[in-house]
Image 1 (cartoon, rainbow, N blue to C red):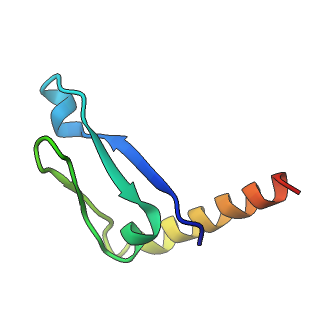
Image 2 (image 1 turned 180 degrees about the vertical axis):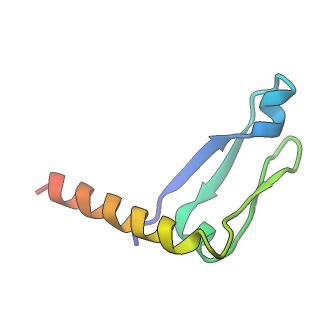
Image 3 (image 1 turned 30 degrees about the horizontal axis):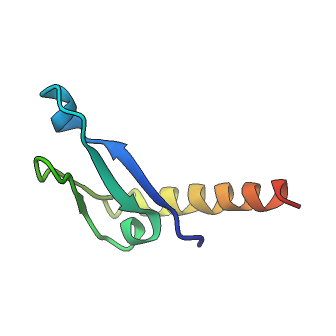
Length: 70
């Protein structure tokens, strides 16, 4: 799987009117790592039940990207 650094807005900070991003790396997320907001320390992670669906989606996305670049 291709390494992809991404970020999402922190939902806790957004509710408080703050603008903070939670940085995460997809393959680490799939291996069970949780990522924390640098402002409020809220964490994101995947449940065991969600991992196969996310892995499949990421594999399909990477395949589409490869096909488009050919």
